[in-house]
Length: 623
Image (cartoon, rainbow, N blue to C red):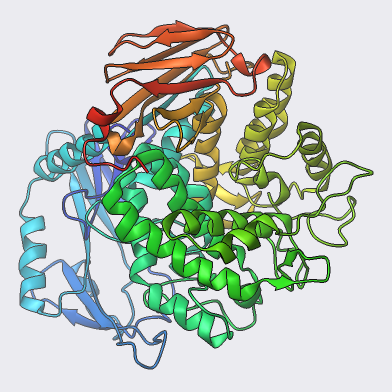
């Protein structure tokens, strides 16, 4: 984690290192070296079947131990889109240059590794550059760069990234610690500061879900980027705005107004869901998810320019869509019918509470950007499913508690959406949907059960129960392999499941550290809310260091241990406030001990406040 590499040792004889170079973003480095003495190793290629996506042609470079595979994408998203050119340059023994055109060569070869000599390095480069001479020149530069130079430049850039980003540290449970590190690595390598793009459920490391962008980014990965590295979060939202024409097109195609965001988005921003899947036409909560993410950025980071040029355009276009999408009924309430909710085991249902709530939130946020009475009327009169006799929220009209649920759905209305329903109904929601949720469903679900359970915890026993039944459950079921990577579900689905990594990490930021994004226009000096929970059962320390607020102008750290909680900051003039405990002044780079598990006494926890708001904000937004 500290070096940004995957490293594997084989019987204490040979060490294998793999990394995507942080400075040279089109370069993958695979290195092998002897740890001690002389060893002979056999390396075999694993080319897989010919590509169905790119019509590769092979170019042999005489006298060189590499080959160039180049071609164009075979399938375009729309008739007006261009075929994209891709070139892959990879190591290949000269004796293997006779492979058929379009096929990656399959080969095996013995190599001698000597600990007193340079390691064996394989370089793979991927580029859109069409000038072959330039491509070969760049690749030769990599070949002629010593291993330690490549490594040092990569590590220097990685170190800078790590120093910029917030850090999550866990002690006491080795496997959990390694999974935290692997999850952070998965997210950090999937996006770059200089690229306006989003991430698919498989991140950068796999082709899962065809590399398409789903709600997985805004709902599951984005909240971690938001507090860890705001530039990466903002770039993900910029990707959406850059593809606004595709969302407008989808709305128009479905006879709606505004921006109806695609369930699966890719290069063009148009709807890319396969025709056989109904999610593309029916899973509409994605539009609300994007605006909710925009609101979270605004409330936490408060940048006037970003709000004007990025966040509000997303919200306004989406509010226009929701206003054309809802239906008013004889009851005087607005309904959203014929949808697929986050629980994708059902379809063609009405009034899914998560969909209705996230639509309501996005309408109200759009009204903050541009006042509109219609949007407010729809939001305040949105229908909410509620069963008074059982005091819980049915997932949709006609839902019965015994019906199996695929993944987190109703429980998301409390966290992350923050809807203020009664505590008793939220407890019943957790109880009913824990029983109903398929234990073989997607990995990220159990982190949400954990966060929502500790939010309502009244005792250490409640925390222990939530840790075992939810956090450890998701972790033990879905973490696999040498590198502690996430599977989408036990034994099936996407591997290197970045969605699972994001949900898991939220458990530490929003669960143990207890962060809640809080904004009150009448009290702008309140920056956030914290309700730390001390860890129990195997974990001895959870530390979330340098949580970013106001785009990093404020950084706060929380460390929780059994029986102790410490907070410190990098800024002057910050303090915590609780009605019962009063004011607790924070010190710069010095840990201040605060009463633990404040949530057992006061569900509001601590408010993080500042006396120097104008100085901190500078040109940022006061709303």
